Length: 83
Image 1: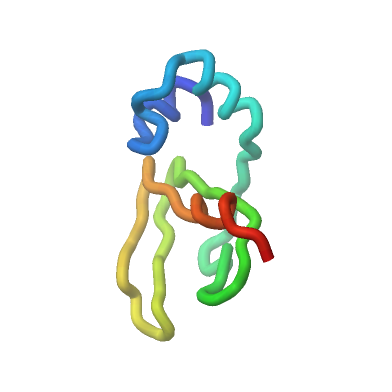
Image 2: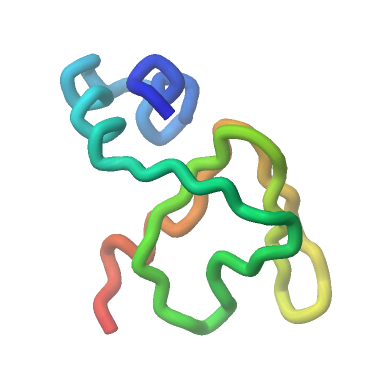
């Protein structure tokens, strides 16, 4: 994801171009296979994810409560919490 694409992510939409470019340099792109669990309820996360393409299912127990798609994000609170 580059700085131009980050402009479309609500969390970053008001940031100046220089900040978007800096964030884009810190990011790693992952190609995640379907069905891969990225984080689990009740656990400590260490990453922040922005979905560039595809979808992610958000589950509470066995129930799906949301589907996230391009431009959506999750894991932001993990960056603020410590174990």
